[in-house]
Image (tube, rainbow, N blue to C red; front, side, top):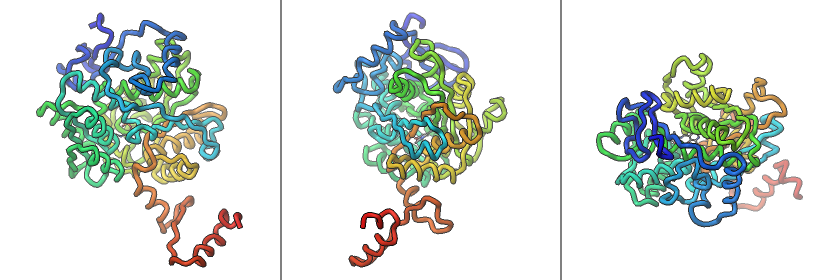
Length: 434
Ligand code: F0G
């Protein structure tokens, strides 16, 4: 295997299997697989220069914010890659959000700017490319919504049949709408996301459909580029912290791998610390962290942030390693903190879905606890677009008891000019224009 530039290795039993082996888990022990690469021929300055030289590319595969980093993602597949393109998401500075969080140097990596509105597109371009390479006819996932949307879109681009399995009543409207619109066969399961994941794991094996949950190691290779791209946007000068919302822990694991490789290949000379943020009501990983990662926990999850409403995260081991290796932390924030953070990010004109706002709430919490110190630079990853979950917004702004502090209540009026005038006079900001 070592002669090949890329291969797969089992995190459980250590078995090595070829890059194009179609199993989603280790064929020997059913452990999670990892993609391994030999170090690229170039390293350090030369590798950075290779990636930087592609920044102006507008067409073809290198215009993708994933495949621009092909040497670090899947070097042997770039020629066959199926790309939207995706990535190239902005790294935003918002004085309003930074001031609210109490972090002078806070940047927001907005993954909601991907083609289907979440970071999942970065993993899916690689996952669906791999599906085609191994000759799969159909692809499947369990999802809290965003993976389903991305899988449905990329499967449609590739001409593959798609099956998505989601928990009924627990998927935000925008995401369910996308899965249906892009044409995936959609199963609404009377159960939780964790039930859906078990179901699709079994179904994919029994029925021979290619599993594209973050169990699939090729997804994580794509998601690594969130980190590579933000490092590139910072001129390869690493921030002190990278803060990410955590559910099934695929991203946390992918970020750890990206940082380990970036260090080993000389792209950066020190490692940022990872902060994974969960919702209080779905915080098995935070629980394990507090106990020094002696064991995984399983909880019955309940949070307003449906994307991370997950009780039994599949990438526990590899995410724990990522946190350990980066001297990272795991924290949890309440639904009220998530909704306040979301109102701040939304009100700054940036906008994100509730799970993404957990990252901003996490920064505020870690600053208050003195974990992130004043003067340290943090990048928070906003994982999904504001329009993914419209109900979360209308419910927040129209809630009466108690009305949230940042509620922007719509006002219903008759179709008369005096009524419009009355509203303008009463509104502090609008009154100033008179
Ligand atoms: N943020 C958003 C918007 C998500 O959709 C997800 C996960 C996460 C954060 C957490 O990332 O699972 O890698 O720790 N969504 C998955 C899905 C579970 O099915 O769309 P993670």
